[in-house]
Image (tube, rainbow over all chains, first blue to last red):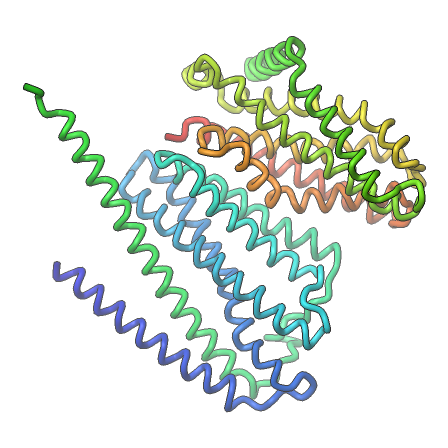
Length: 242
Length: 229
């Protein structure tokens, strides 16, 4: 009991902290950072687009690693495997959310900047395919029967993880229009924009971890309920009828 | 040697079953024919030969993709009748032999459909191949294998799912999209002769890489899916 109340308090603290960081990030992005020279205020959506894009590429790895762990522990340690499965489903849902927000903010930016909502350019197409892959992952989870959901989903997750680099390579080979990476050597981002980018990146990372953990806890609770019910059914079947 | 023998047995069984019923081949043939007719009506291929050449590679693969999905959905249902699949799971032979036999059988069926379809396609679309037509003899089998190997795997994956018929395209299409891009680009490149031969060769190499990677993954993971409980 004590442990769960500590966890709950930590969760609340984390929520407050991430909202605080997001507020600072919002202030930086909207009010403090200088307006970009050519695009004007429209460019400010970039401070939301970039963190979601980066994090949307991190959560699939969580999903992939959790799926591998699930397959590894499936026969060796079923309880650990269930935990890994819960983490995998939570990561997949957060991936769909973050990649979806990346696509949406990208379109909002693309209309004023490029004059079109959508271009079939390399990064856009690979991002869309990433989103499609994880939606299909969630659909498989929904459609498969309860006993095998974990296995089938984990196998599909491996397929998706292999598919992502192939998609990226093949489409980059096909066409490219998206702005080149803006950080590091040869990047075109002025250092005066850094605070807004970094605060927002930190804020959305904290927020992502929060909803991931929340979804994970929810899935764990569902699994425990299911186990309890199964146990009760077994006990009921063992009672000797009179 | 023993493994190859098992693959052959599975393949032979599937071919014999198909020879007796001829369900999936007939279904696929008619389906692709309908797709070709529907597309011919929508696009008026006789009026615009250049446009037709540019889009017909895509149309060919879309038709084959849809047709193979209809056949792949059926290919495991056979094993479910009379609990054959449970017997397969208890049999001492390797699970991947069952998979390879099934995938090869499906591959042969789709190739047969392609052989019948190609002349019809050329007639209906008034098609003249401008590039090196012999390359199609490499692209078609490679592309077909890319669709069939994943399709057979996912059909087995969805075997005990609630709405299996719907599930297969929903997983097969996103995973196959890079392969579809590769085969359509290569085919269109050959048909129109607008693409540099080096590009066509790169697409073919990529397709080959895709085939090798996914065949390996399917063989490695098939046992897990077959025995998923």
